[in-house]
Image 1: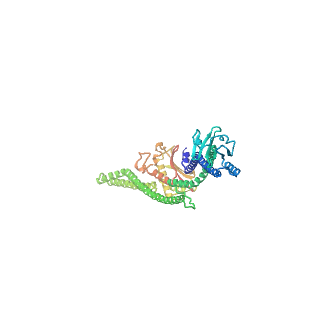
Image 2: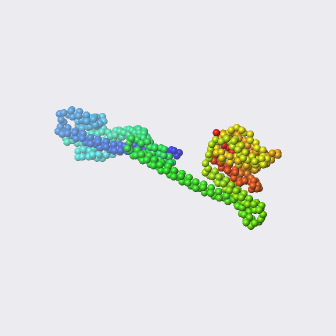
Image 3: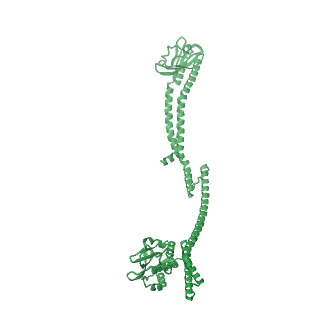
Length: 502
């Protein structure tokens, strides 16, 4: 329905309807004028013709007696009658007929009193159209044959009586025929003009529709369409040229605004990111440094107040203070590194690395603590498996997984085991680190990847770690857009991460 309404509102339809309405109005005016004016004009013309013929016949018989060339004059009068569709009766004042062009049709008036005195009387169905001293012209309706005549009754200069009449009913038929022809011509004109109006309106509205489409595109910030200029100098071509210029300027201006807006958004985003990182760093540091600061403060006060005066106690106090200071330094550095990774400030030095060799190197570094905890390590991969990554960060992830596996492993069937496997999954290399022990509760599976979250909150500070190792893994993997996670197995827990295969 909306499309139909739009079509009715289009310029083409309006132009077509306008042309059709104008033609209809013109035809109706012609029919009205034809019906009202034509008959009156016809009667006026016939009256003038009757006057002229009366004058001519009067000239023929000025002499009084019948002229010698009566036969010639009679023939000439008959020609005039035939030419003008007239019936002419000429007789003397003694009722002797001199000329009768149609005796049968004039039979009804041959015995009529043609005197002017009688004719100037207005009878029923008669209208006097012209009257002089020696002539009267009437419009009569003959009841006998129901025909309307124009009748001239006159007395010539030689006292002859003249009667001329002509039927005017034919004019009414002519008006009807003329109106029918006009209506037919009007219908044909409407069809032809409608076709021409459609063709012409299409020619004129096509560039307007094109300009409208371009303008709509510009309103939606689409400046790809341009008006195709023609080799004309009309208003539409000038408008198209102006719209093209405006489109180019708007596109240029909007592109500059987008550029400045993008730069501004980046500046605001960077500022917000730095501010958020600063707040997060202060919050984390404040949260995690409260305990070591309290310990350092307590042992420092003990040394100052000489709570224990023996050298071994003072050495123990100093050792605790140094140990807590080192832990604080390590924590702050780890937090700074984690912040840098999480907020995209690090630069990854990706290259080909042998993931198997890297795992073996991490195991070698942890071999002492593995042996101290009587942990059995299972890693039998000897083939070279190359991945594309930064060896420093991948080594940190593997080290975090193995460290957690050592801390949280427990005996199952009398054995503490760590199992490492490397396999291809979905066009990625997946590294899994499994350790025997208790499963992680379902509600903790997602929480363990957050900062400072520890599943076992009862662990002492010596073995509990900083609580940001898995958050570190999450941040690095998010930078690589690779999968990572944890799976509860039958006898333990497996942590995994993916690397891009070469």
